[in-house]
Length: 111
Ligand SMILES: [Zn+2]
Ligand SMILES: [Zn+2]
Image 1 (cartoon, rainbow, N blue to C red):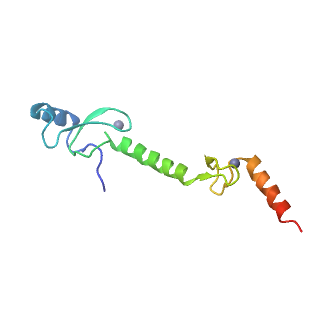
Image 2: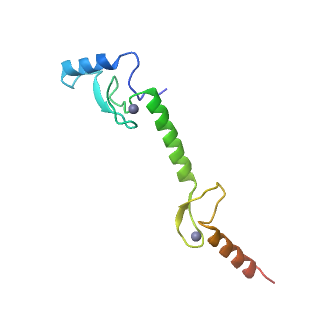
Image 3: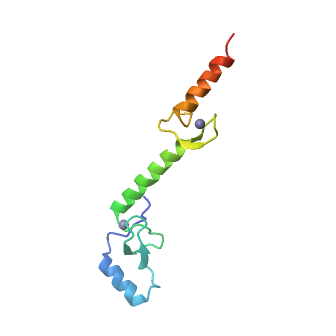
């Protein structure tokens, strides 16, 4: 598993002390700002970007939500507007466009 939050084995207190002693340029004491809650924390890994497992979970949920939102983003075939469909099978930006296209299809497909 990718550990991207502060290590649990070393306490924040210890990391902060290490950081103070080394002047911010020491392995195992990287000063970071949490990407979720904005808290300043000390991490044992340079790529750590989240302060805790809790914030890590929140970040995962946010990414998933963002992915789902983008997956439903599409362009309305009638008016060309880019919109986020409320349903997975939503094709048109609005009922007006859906009905207009439906009417047009019915008219065009007539005998
Ligand atoms: Zn956080
Ligand atoms: Zn439309």
